[in-house]
Length: 262
View 1 (cartoon, rainbow, N blue to C red):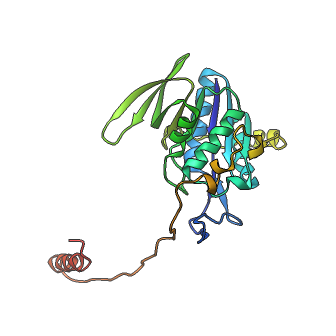
View 2: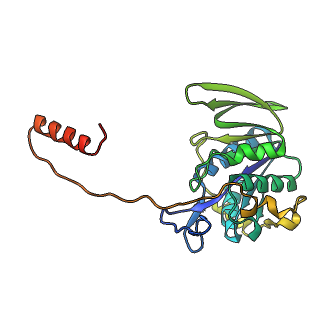
């Protein structure tokens, strides 16, 4: 089975500046890490590979520094990696990102299963995976919390819905997005790190795509634009009250009324 895992490098801190003109995060010079949800996607892929055999590839879109998380994926068992890196991809919203990743997925050739983390910690939209599947014309299932059965032509999964749990069987090729906790991510292997430190990572630009229409990528291909983005204001004001239980309860009620919570 050929499995493709989508991974992303995200800021390792909440103290990130924003370009006021474009609404894009300024990622230069800040600590980064692999998106936490993607660790669960990668572990899911490794579990399926160990059960059914095959190969696990990873794909990421970002600047050259994103190679770091691809190499991290190698230490966790991934076989090959591809980085989609081009200035024309910068500033992409979820739609342009999904389209770019779909074009990258095609470069890998025949893939039976694509696995994405449910969402990223820097965007929290949970839209890229399903949109990517739509561009590829394949079935998809979101919010997967368990892999129940691997069949020759399909996979059976448990889906976490708002008010219920659903069992879904989906035929390959398909895409799933996984929840945290589906599996416990393994630790990176130092032995694999040494073995893969010189492993080639394929770097793809827009010139390598079948569709080279620049209006489909980056800011040009993004129908949604961020009007304003800002860090939340911190409020560390505090009051200390003394008194009996009845007095404190009255003060609490008065404060809630003052703040218009009740």
